[in-house]
Amino acid sequence: MKRNRMSHKALKAEIVEIKDEAEDIKSFFVRPDEELEFLPGQFFMLSICGVGEAPFSVASAPHEGLLRFTIRKSGKVTSALHRLRAGELLGIRGPYGNGFPLDPGGTAVIIGGGIGMAPVRSLLFHLLKKGDFDLWAFNGARSPRHILYADELLGFKGRTKIVLTVDRADPGWKYEEGVITVSMEKYLPKIEKGTAYVCGPPVMFRHVVKTLLDKGFREENIYLSLEAHMKCAFGICGHCRIGNKFVCVDGPVFPYSEIKDYEEFLA
Image (cartoon, rainbow, N blue to C red; front, side, top):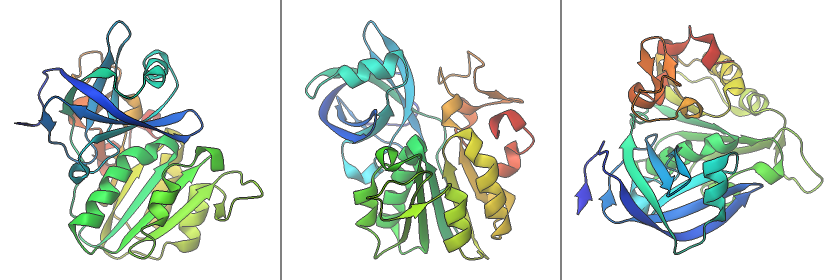
């Protein structure tokens, strides 16, 4: 039985597999009691009895079967999740929020920084299955120890342009070095028509957006996922309020043209 979108009912979900992705980052492949439909860019609330719950975007594409959540250990709930093992259960409800627009209308440029690569991985794998797009993917991290999905992405290098970069390389690193905008300026051509999709630490947004504008993207065709600001999923706590909008309800995906005046979310 499939669940339709935006249900608040909590389900049980079995952890089928856990994969170490990077330093303090694991992917959890889970199977809910019921099949759940979602769009790339949406998120779910995951809970552990006696600990709490937190929002997490989906790293898997809708066609991949198991739900995949790539989670960095950074607090009470995430630390508890990292202690779980395959075969154990957690709570899941959702999906919540909107998603990325799925027709880029030209060239699609996907940019993920650090753990922000998780939701755009969902989009990337969806677009790769959906059609023959002119597709670029920039994946950046602090160091080779923190880069996500490198082997998976490089497997698609014949079908799309993949650029991996780290702020600080080590002697074994074979790819780019420098902040992600350095690689964008180096490789990304001028774009006459298309859409850019961005997720990462807020400090990255301003610089990435400037580079995209310089490359020819229109403000309304640059989409940012502000998932780092979410907490409750209902717009009740006010933690993610932007003017008269709430990231968890009206987002987490917004065109830059709608949020460009809210400096606190782009700094």
